[in-house]
Length: 298
Image 1 (cartoon, rainbow, N blue to C red):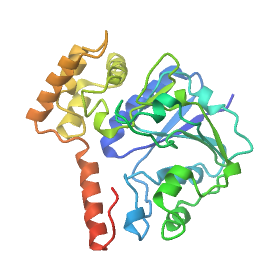
Image 2: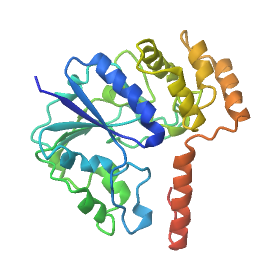
Image 3: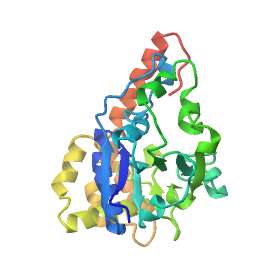
């Protein structure tokens, strides 16, 4: 048995409560000791070419993980918008030597053919669940970001992992360990990857009740209080209708569209803006790119 399973979570301040819920779901299902570290407030560089800049406050944080671990042992990277249903030791112990990272396998048809919790489209392969061999991944996040000024694009770095040779990448993480807006009996980890339908900002997610059930467990054990949640609402990070849904839990027998509509009306009446800080960042980035006279991709 390893001494610790080290899990690093990409997040900003608006997602710290979501990190706490994710951590609870990990620890509740895992038999091995776990250390969960939010990747927040890191001093991360940005490229000079604003078109290739980070899309979130933590886009490049994953590349700092080997250095944070002293280039020793393994590490798991996760995004904050996730929930775990099985022992994460199963993910930790997936074989992937002699590769450097283990990322998601080819997406199944139902995932490749949908986006936005069911709308038509094609999802990109995700590196948002990743197991890293920190002994081999001798990454310097400063050098990696510097490469965005001409050597490769943001998309090539984040979606194609161009900083590694193909032989250093193992596509061995099963979809059920990064289940994109999907839940069934095999799901080990659900990823609420569509930002506008994440349960804490939107009442319309058909799988949001799993997140609310985890929150209720935390309240029952004293790890979380209603006051903690109300502060997140006051700060604008959580939707105003969240407390009412937590009390009513209307989706236990299946998704209730009428209840979701009612909660949505509460949020609109309160002029709630989803991910206000993230959207403000995107707007500022777009304006800065325009000042550079470049095409804007947000």
